[in-house]
Length: 397
Image (cartoon, rainbow, N blue to C red; front, side, top):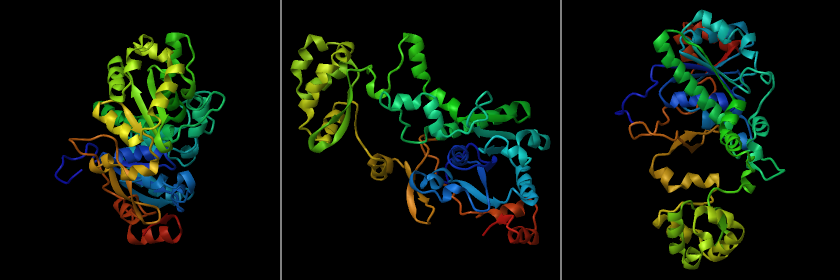
């Protein structure tokens, strides 16, 4: 947001996060985008996502903007002491380590609330308290056990969703919980612990399929083999092997669809009169439609559907989105510093405040980039800071 804009809603809130990977960092990123000062406490060697390859190579620049970095060795008492001094200045502590890790360090909620009863403490876990809470969870683990992989893949071939849906949404719910706890603190004067978990997030995502069974008595089929609620709602392979998703989800849209594509005979067919008729006729109707559209290009069909206000979508690869005209024209992408120091673009939060997208105020931090300044702020002198760095208890520039 521009300097002339209204202050961001969480300006003045300080967050100290002990997070890594995706779930915990997402929570801090959201709060940071909304104006909070987010201090990322990293191990001496840095968050491991700074060094990941393959599908993890983009984790750090994606989820760690608008944060400051301090690197501390929490295995040493002096490192824990520095962390406690920072926490004493915080409104929120956020963590996503294995159960018991923060307690061993004396940085769990029960310990910290004695020092600061107003503290909001956000724990991001695999499972909320219950029989599973001792298990180690990953996004893929909970997708498999929570029904999402079953719904995404073909029958007999469970498949995880193509992004870290539970990690990202779990972090979002952690941030929402923190916001609720801050509001509650305004009313009561006391902080509280917030817990967000991958498994329960996944169950929230598949609730519609659970409730479909409750409402109908029929189990939901995996998405590739489901009976669609709409007659025209599918991916079509068209000219030159391109693919495009096309839909007509109402009787009015069916009328427009047929007229736009020269399908007057199908429009007049009494077997295709209503949407439910078309759902039941898909076995013989869809081959006719596929044949009719096969020689048209994806761009031609896109133009026809856009002109007639019908739902459509070319099949796009993630890397193509950097050049998407809508994202670029609407301010949906912002410059970001990558792990190797190069610059790319990153998607911003998918909402506006006063017509503007919350932007990047701080680039993803270098390891320990803010260690010296933060240590000075909580009372360390230059010689003390030098000693911490010499003994590898802290790392900073």
